[in-house]
View (cartoon, rainbow, N blue to C red):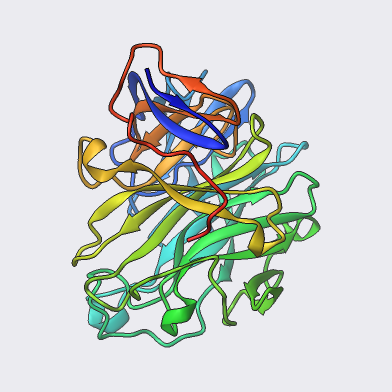
Length: 347
């Protein structure tokens, strides 16, 4: 019998489920529209949408269109739906033609839809690195940039917080970083997003510097990169904390997945409030490669309770237990019986 105490995120087996999209290649956000769940995912060349009565019963639907857009390819990775039905979204865009086409530099942009998410208008780029592309980068994909991100509105409805991967600039600025935008600026986001740097939310979203909350151990221009990336954040009502799941690339070319990690915060405005990251799943236990893009699904991808689904690259063979009390695995020792309890130590 496996017993675990303290503030925990513990992987437990679950009946299999999978998103029916052709390919899941990033965070897959969802919203509720007219009683149905709409989930979006992207391959860069194609925007896809799935609908259903739950995340376990999704079916492929017609993909959304985007107008006034010069930012293809794009991956929609975060969504928010206002009470009046207006949908705001944010996307990862990879600039073509960087370094002769061998590498790219991602940016993060904003979208809006007034027809239930079938059609979006591009509001432009809101987060981009000010560092020049590093064409000598040897990670295989990026010469810098900001991308692979998620967005959440705080409980007070004051700010949208962006958690993104910074692949650019000095080594000490690379890793998982944060920015935020006032809630009232959501319809006009240009120039309204500010990065966290040196403990202050004052650096401009376009350019500016960052201080990562989870810094890269080995920077992204090195072929043996060691860094967390691809943060997926949600509010967990069971433990009343924000929880972020992350990949860890280590320590060879082409970003091999070392494992999946969780970190916790009670206050997104305070960069010192984060607890973790703590490994919750080794790459070998995922069962397929590449095992990227961990994501919790409860009510949506940004709201969950004690035992939500855990999806990895659109596949779910697991749930995540969250709690302060004991968790007892009902069928005896399982594949995750070596997980340790999460404590207050920061990486």
